[in-house]
Amino acid sequence: MNPRYNIWFSLDVPQKENDKTTKEVAYLCPVFSKVSSYIYYGKDTFELKIAQLQWDLLELTARMIRKNQSDYMQKDKSETQTLRNEALKKYYSKSNEDVDDFYESLQKHIRYGVLSVNDEVEYEKCRKKIDEMLAEYSQYATTLDDCRRFLTAKPLNKKLKQLISNFPDNQRP
Image (tube, rainbow, N blue to C red; front, top):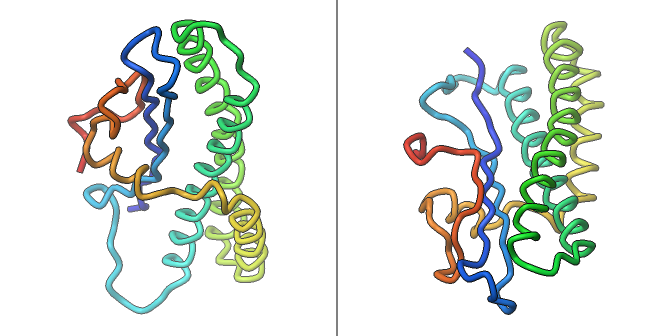
C-alpha cells in the first residue's frame, strides 16, 4: 500500500459585497491520510525515504500554488467582489491544473525512475532538486493558519465565507 497525499485548499472571501477592507484569503494544506496509508515501524528504508520525498514534493507544490496566487492577486483589479470571486474561481482551476501537471511529472519520475529500480543515485538527485526548490519557495511555506483552517473547516475571520474548497467536510480527520 502506498501513502495517500493530497493538497486541500479553501478560498474565503468577504461575506459582504461592498466590504473593501476585508481581503480574501486562500489556504492550502498538504494532507496525509493516515487511514488509507501504511505506517512503517521498522528501520529507515528506501521506501520510507521515497515517502518523505513525496511529502516534500507535495509541500513544494503547495508553495508553488501560493506563489502563483500571490502574483495573481497583485495583478487582479476587479471592480467588485463578485467579479473578483469569479476571476479567482477561474484562476484556481487553471493554476491547480498547471501545478498538478508539475507534481504528476515529478511523482512519475520518483515512482518509475527511482523507486521501481531502487536507484539511490537518482534518489539523491531528486532529493537535492526538491530541497533547492523548497528553499527557493520558503516564503510560501505552509503556515499554522493553513493547518487551522483545514482542521476547523470554518473561515478563521468572521467577516469571511468559504467560496470554494476541494475537501469535503465529511472527509476531515
